[in-house]
Image (cartoon, rainbow, N blue to C red):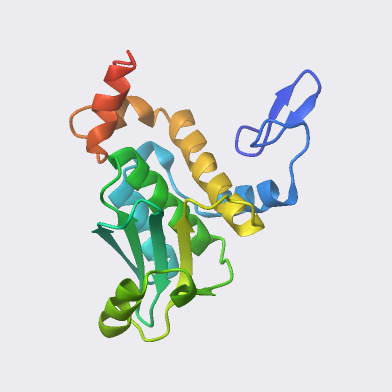
Length: 193
């Protein structure tokens, strides 16, 4: 079954390529399979619209110029979810960070007090404009050694795998892509869709 595991000469191969799947891989796979999303239609906006419909909550993306150590974060507010990403990074990295934060959201990871992780100036702005209680997840350069960070990364890799299996890479690297820098990047590697 291509949606769960692949078969190798030694047995089933999980997401990370091992012969057995970890609890985290099983959990991530179940969430991605449960999305009911047609990856043949994948674009970032289309995928987010699908998640909004599933969750009956708006997801608002916002590019912000962070310091280099901060990739992005997710704030769960009363009426919507906000995903902030570092607009100083390459578009491909921005998409990765957005999908990572969506992974935390969809995996229903425990919310954290973002004031403990974010710079005070950002905390003050968010409290004034979005929510006094800053609950969510924050992605920094720090090692991804917590189970939740590893699961969010597995979520991104699983989505990437589904996009490739659905044959969307060629479409996503053409001029009408939802990821502008991806076409230039893949052409620089010699891939011409």
